[in-house]
Image 1: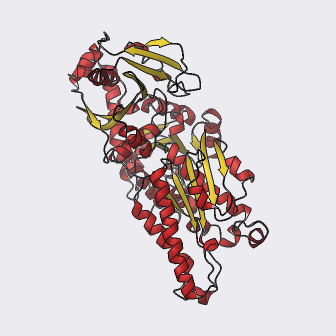
Image 2 (image 1 turned 180 degrees about the horizontal axis):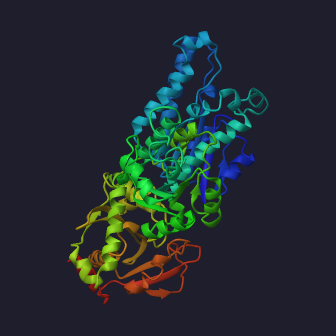
Length: 551
């Protein structure tokens, strides 16, 4: 269980249930309020460092101006240096929450002497210049303003408990932090499933006809147009779009192809499940078709009955409760963090094309008479890539997103991978793949840790579900064994850690020559239930005939 060390310039009510309701999967350790200097140098074990700064706690605007300016310069330098040193010595995420809000009258706000804001802006600017992938800075005031500062801050709490926030404000701050941590350790959703009638446009296409549905530049028609624009944006950033509608396919396609105000076009949608079957059945078929877990899907439908059915039969799917006012839908979608990523990779921007390739490949393979001959015919070209600054983000992303073809399902941040790659005897590499269908990009990650006495441990072996069925796993293991032989490896240990999603690889090791062994008292094995394996890599007799399709 991950450990979070939490410190702040103000009391954050460690015993408040909001912390434990939202962070029930984490161990929380609160340092003494205000004693944040010690927190930066603590020897307490922690995986995440959270520091909340209320600039109001650090400076007093009523102080004489020259003294105030000197104090600001000193605080700015010391704070930035503290954070910089923490990043240099700590490998985990460092989350900084900043607030500089103070109540001032209109005339004072017009003056150019808001020292709290200036200090906050300077700190944020200098932290941004550090360009550290483990640093996450949250501008609390931008979020607080959505709810009204009078609701967020509480003077009674400040004077009685040294706590600037109201309980409501505390809950909202915790929610922001949890969103950041979720995205660090858990992948974004991959697929948005959309209804049509009264969702992508107003009205019922089967009854109203294409000329009478609400979609355009005025009134409610513009709301649906703007909603589609929000959808289009997340699609460009790597979210797959599918349509699931109880309708006549011809009517729906007529709108996508012929309505002049449709922002979304036919080519933006990977799959149209337009029929009269139950939507939860269609969604399950989509998951199978795309080789994705149901927890990768988000469902948006205006009909409460359809939403209830999906929640009942497919609880893993994230079913959105749309706002009662459709005028709020464009912003509601923008504010969802299910699809958000800290950074976009080249692979993210090519997702729709890649999954179209996947669908075509599956169809062609199923129609082929002989599998290996077919795989040879598509000219598979795999390539091993060293870890570099250009692919580091993708390497981390693969550990966060890959669930099905993943032996141990270990999540690694970018900095984690950098540290693993620094150990000279470790093997850390990526694999890219091309074939006649196109360039699939970087699709696999292998991490092998050196133990001792020329023995190694297969820490991570994962592969994107988009390229399953090409025998790539066999080729990767063959190449890995070649590398290990060069390093005079005597024995490779491996482990399969079962999850709710990775049954696909339960027999991978046995099928490639590994022998099941009793779990030994060695620190590289997981503490939870797992199966442990070993293989003699030196002069091993494992046959890799199926890897020959790669040349």
